[in-house]
View 1 (spheres, rainbow, N blue to C red):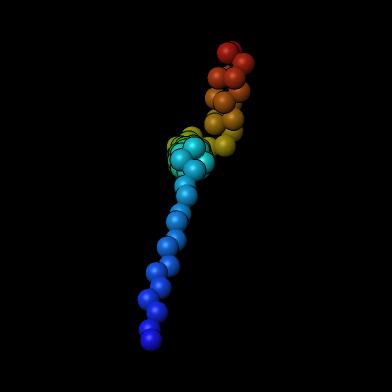
View 2: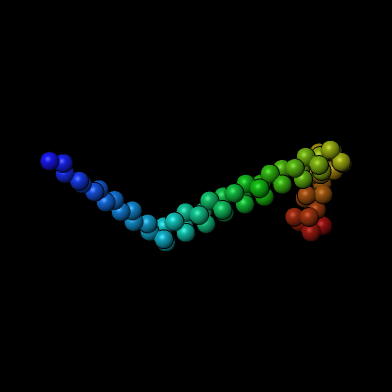
Amino acid sequence: MKAITTAKTETRTDVGYEATRFTLHAGIAMATLVGIWGFACMIGGLANCGAAELLRGFLAAVTGA
């Protein structure tokens, strides 16, 4: 005699957790892209006018002078 058995598995998903996890990963990816863009702009500024002029311009922008 053969017995037929059926295994039933169930997966429960917490939608709030998954949405939060996706949003966190999207935010991290965007922050990484912004950081890379800022670094590229800094390198471009250094290549264009040099470190002293770049620092002088940065300080003028921060202090408003």
